[in-house]
Length: 299
Image 1: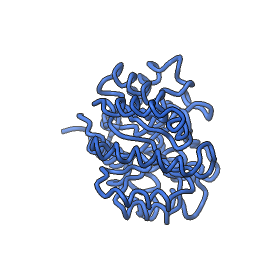
Image 2: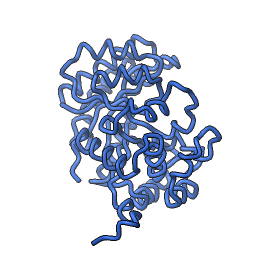
Image 3: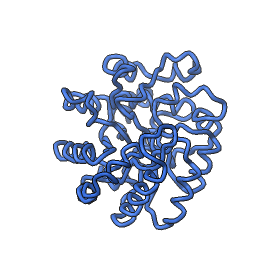
Image 4: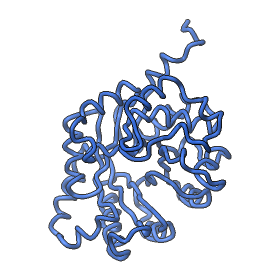
């Protein structure tokens, strides 16, 4: 019989899946291979690499072919980049070709972002709808990026009841906003942002009061962004003490505020588990299962 007193070896062998790591970002140009190896050493066995433009979607697809079975790509036109498709209509043909590749497992991140005006709202809406239609055609899940635009996002999605599964990437909203998404059956992706969230109505409350169940949850490092600051003053003590030495070793040795890495994912999972009053094993297994099912991945 296995020694049940020591779960370390079991935890190291869990399947952790990073729902979004921007490995085609320029900050990873010099050492992509090392970053991916560190992620594997930390227990992250599969990584979704999102594309946010035609160019980055193509680069993400290329990366998925270099690391088959480990890296998978998504093809998206970020709201900020929407105007590029209007200015160069032919680029949509290249984009839709990238999206059709079997290594590309989702369409997005796409959606609406009203916090910054890199593209006009009407332009954002037009390109968002084109991507929803593509997801429906290809029967691939949709990754949503939304900032200060939930009402319009939901209104547009109402037109497409046949849309496959929807994942709200890097959710940073309120409990009320989460309930609207969950009410539609959407999945929420959480990042190290929960270290920054100090509100009584945000991500932490979602986890603490059981509003968000593990069967609707994905975990994302969102590298090189969203560094999980485990030393944050507002982070409750019981959450800080729940993070294992092994996870902190990877986090503090390889990740910084300037460049987060996928190897931070175990620490994020442990924090989420502490807020939810669950074991890290439970959260890791549930989120991995969700990702395998949503993205159609093989173990």
